[in-house]
Length: 246
Image 1 (cartoon, helix red, strand yellow):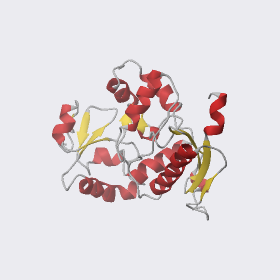
Image 2 (cartoon, one colour):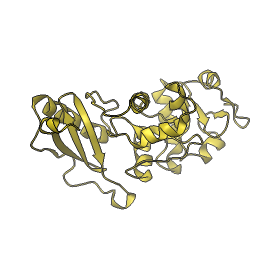
Image 3 (tube, one colour):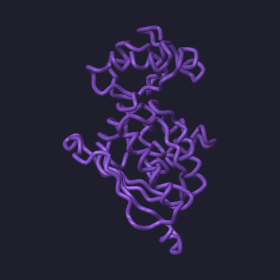
Image 4 (cartoon, one colour):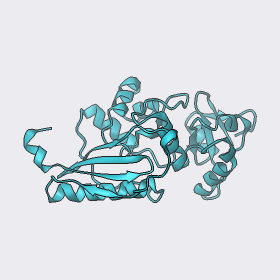
């Protein structure tokens, strides 16, 4: 950060069920967002949920971006927002910014693997570099790095903690909240898919399942690649599950 920019930065925080999220914004957009490390052990709802604090600092543009960011975060953690629209002002190498831009394109309720992000930005061999970029993401969840998983679907590399990563994915509908919620989750996927049956790509295999398949059900905690149809799954290289036929 340039020293002459310091006074132009605005700082604030919003209280969510995940704890306080601290945001820094400049005249061109959000520079940083920090979520405290989280665990199920302290998952009770804070008494001041939704409280927003704007600290001193920042010019008019920075304060406008800050207030918008804090309001959007409040809506997101309440389950009332699926997309962020606040401007971002990301500081990083060209590669990092390309990776962050691709991560930002992963839709609400879906996941992608590090390898898929590397492929999408034209650097298929740079899987580790994509992982480093994801780990250095300065503006989670505006750039939703929690939606990026290992090639086998494992949840890896999330600064605020893997329990929060799983909780966010469940909140968005990428995975069920628990094994008992699987059927309700599968029905919600169909509703989200306009009543059509989606296909679930089972990461770590070359197979896709229909919701409810025993293979999919056994891996309920591992985010699948969610496709709108079996045809879309086939186009990406997945084959029908021999148990359910996809």
